[in-house]
Image 1: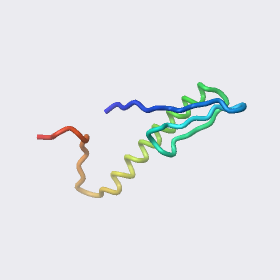
Image 2 (image 1 turned 30 degrees about the horizontal axis):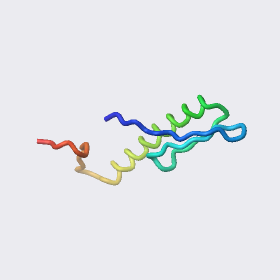
Image 3 (image 1 turned 180 degrees about the vertical axis):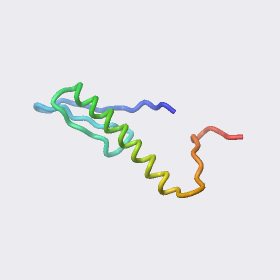
Image 4 (image 1 turned 135 degrees about the vertical axis):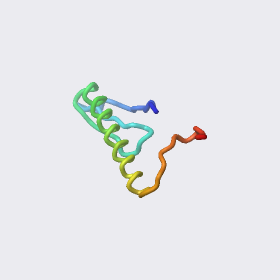
Length: 73
């Protein structure tokens, strides 16, 4: 499932800072806007991968992966 995330960014002094609104803890700072957006993409991807692995570990054996809102037969 592809999802769109929202980056809130701003220039402050000699740095660009930004956050991903939908995922707490995903924030970065870089010297240019382009570098900031790339860092946010990488950090978001890593956070989602970590959260997924953490959820699978917490579920233990016998878990099922499903997409909320979609009924399975």
